[in-house]
Amino acid sequence: MTRKRIQIKKIDNISSRQVTFSKRRKGLFKKAQELSTLCDADIALIVFSATSKLFDYASSSMQQVIERRDRHSAMHRLDRPSMEQQIESDSNDILRKKVEDKNHELRQLNGEDLQGLTLQELQKIEENLKRGLTNVLKVKDDKVMQEIRNLKRKGVELMEENQRLKQVPSLIQLHRQSSESIISNSSNLPEDGYSDTSLKLGLP
Image (tube, rainbow, N blue to C red; front, side):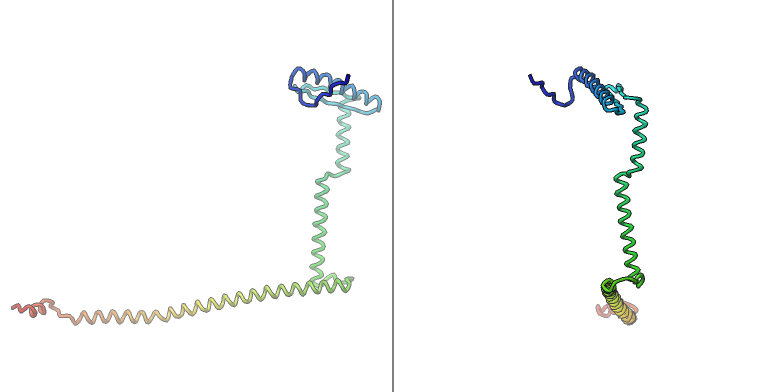
């Protein structure tokens, strides 16, 4: 008769879970003891139950096995840097190499460190300089044209402002003449406003 295979999942029944834990823990410790005896291995097991109860097994001394493990981990970290440290170191090396290459290119563009270059390399530097000079002149021309347009616009604005200022005296003169005309007309009126009315009505 074939033994039924048990599905590995959490046991819901608490009593069954405790019984299974006890049996399997003893079996685990027995297998660890056998492995230590057969293979002369130094083994330590630490198990906490669901109720936080501690169970442990050590083929020699639990403290000695833990200390041995800590020493091994420390030596492993010193001998082999972590993946993050290795990636960071590689990135720094790549950036440092790029900076050095760019500085070298700048020195060559300034006419330095040209000794030992081949004719093709010198021609490439010459082409880069011509291309760079063309771009500089283009930007410079654009800036000059922009300045000229700004000056022309300011000149037009100044001329318009000058025309407005020239019109100010004419407006003042016109206002003055209008004021004088009003004053002159007022002075020609008869002093006694009733005399003219009396004559028109034939009153004594």
